[in-house]
Structure formats: structure tokens, C-alpha cells
Length: 322
Image 1 (cartoon, one colour):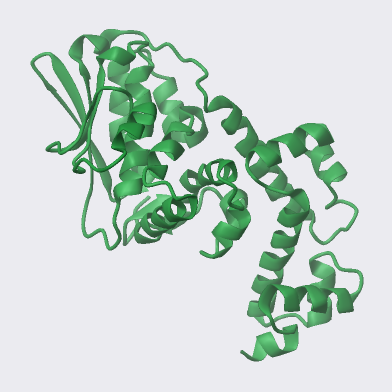
Image 2 (cartoon, one colour):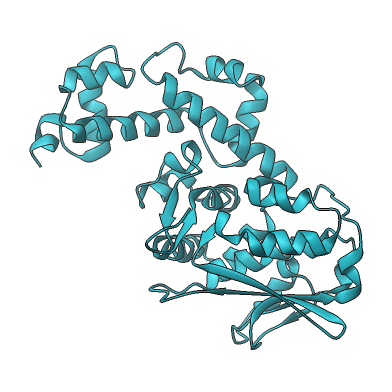
């Protein structure tokens, strides 16, 4: 798959949700600012322009008041949660194969990003860089990318032999990065890269559940719920929490707990889904406001009108003319 401009898979942005939740920021409200709520959960295979992803990552760090937020998000990302890219890595027999899979298939997650493998002497390096013009500061995405890429050699079970190099200059408080990128951290480096001892390459992988496993489960359940909710939004009964949880095979309490882990309130997710669907339907110009009201789960068009004014500040008739 090729793209005219560099792009990043929308699924990589889902990890922002639990991170923001931990810092008291509503993920749905945050993503709405960029027009991707609740699509961030419902359509993770979509591609987002790379510049937009850089901008979103920067805004995330600003909203959380965390200059190293990207590294935290990468730390919360489980290799298993990255789709085919992660499956190829975990399906490898040793670290050499895993590194090759990570580098060769980078375009499954990032279009316009490259990972090169260089083995010299006793060390192997995974060098990461973005091609072309950046438009926005890529620092937060680089933090996150290296935190995830570091997890590949970590599958060898030898964290002490892994080093992270960052081109960024040292800045106040950057020792906090060691919690997420490891203690062997070098700033002002020539490249953004992961470096490790060459002897690890032949070591069989030791897949383990890291701290991100709980987040992976929560994000999957949230995405499943959001997807089913979008399909059943026209039916008031089938779009209730109890019906959604039954459809995806979870108890109501388990689904609630996993949504909460991602900072998602079910009623807010349903409201955001109705909003998103209504805006798409009204933009199509094919349906009346009354038809749209029923299509997004309102039995009374007057209730839909009030909700629409709350969403947009204007009634459907006025919004259509605008």
C-alpha cells in the first residue's frame, strides 16, 4: 500500500486514550478537536496524515503537561496491539528475525518512516528516521517510536544490553525518560536508534506480558464496543451498555472497567457516536433532519434537535445551510 504523502496508522493513536485518562484529560474530548472521535476506536486501520499525527502528539503532551508524553505512550504500547507488524515480530524464532521483520515492515504502521539495521563489530543498531519534511516537531512521535522499537530486543530477556540513542539535546528533567526508554540512554546522539549487543541476535524470543498488557485488553474491548455501537446506533435497545457487552462477550462490569481504563464513559461514547454519524449523514445531503434523528437512535426528532444544538451550537436546518 502506498500513499502520496507520509501517513501513520490511526491505531497507533489509540494508545493516547489511557495515557490522557491517567492525567485527567478526556480522550473523547481531546480527539474531537481533531475530528477523529470516536473513529480512533471504530476505524483503527485508517491512515492519518503524518503532519496531523505529529501535531496531535504535541497537543497531547501539552494537554498532559508532560514534555516526555510520547515516551510514556510508547511504553504503554504492547507489541501485540500493533496488528500485523507485531504479529510478524512475535512470530519470529529469534531476535535477528524479529528485528528484520520490524525494519522491513515499518510501512505497516508508518508511511514515510524507515528503520535500518546495521551490525558492526559487537553491536547491532536499529536506526529510525522520518523521510521528507516534518511540518511539525516530530519529537513526541520519535519518543514513542523508540519506546516501542526498544521492546523488540527486550524480547531477548536482556534489558541491560540495550541502549537508546536520541538526537535531542539534554533538557531539564529528561532523566524521567529512563523509566520508559531504559537507563542506558544517550542524548545529543548522531541518530535516533536502538543499540544492543550483537550476541543477542541468535537468542530465541521470550514473549512476556509487560505492563502494557492490561492496556491492550482495555483498548481492544473499547474498540470492539465502539465498532458494535456504530453498527447498532439506530436501535435504542441494542445500543445500550448491556446489549453491547453481551454482543462482544463481556460482562457489563468488565466492559465498564476496561472503558474506564481508557478514560471512556459509555454514555459519552454513545453520544459522540451519534454526533459523528449525524454530521456525516447531514453532510451527505440525502436525508431530512427527522430521518437522521431516527437513524442515530432518537425516537423524538425534538430530542435530536436539542442534542444537535448542543453538539454544534446550531439546529440541523441552520447547520445544513452553513
